[in-house]
Length: 202
Image (cartoon, rainbow, N blue to C red; front, top):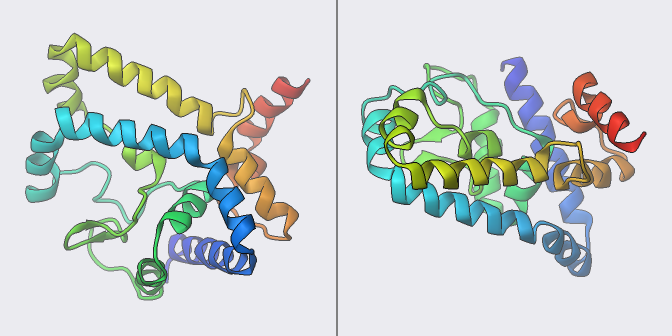
């Protein structure tokens, strides 16, 4: 297995292990903390379906030209895994675990299955990715769509960019306090993001 697979597999196992140890009340509290984020993701999903569904399906899925899904894997924050686990069934999580356990072959993202992404709640970097072709054909020609997208990009930062208190940082902290450590905890590992947090708190 590749370093990427091991990193992803270990993070997924940590998330599943800790969530399995929580009471229903604790799980409900955790879901409440992600409620605003889920609303944001629903808004993004509705926007993408309205303006990009036909274009992206033809360009990326059928013609296999995606600049994102042709790599071995994508950047995932630890919090992406937590949110996905909260929104997934055990069967769905087991499918991810099994996919990560076998040597990866081919030039597609390891999480890309026959029917699309295997994640129930895709990583944020995937959800917010638009290729140059999509931006040119849709956003450049539609000022309303462009303004909506710019607004969504600003909302995205309120969940993952630590110049303010953010959900992704909070979710990492919950697992750190429970004794877990992952290289995917970028809000606590990345020197650049740590500096931003220090400037915020200083």
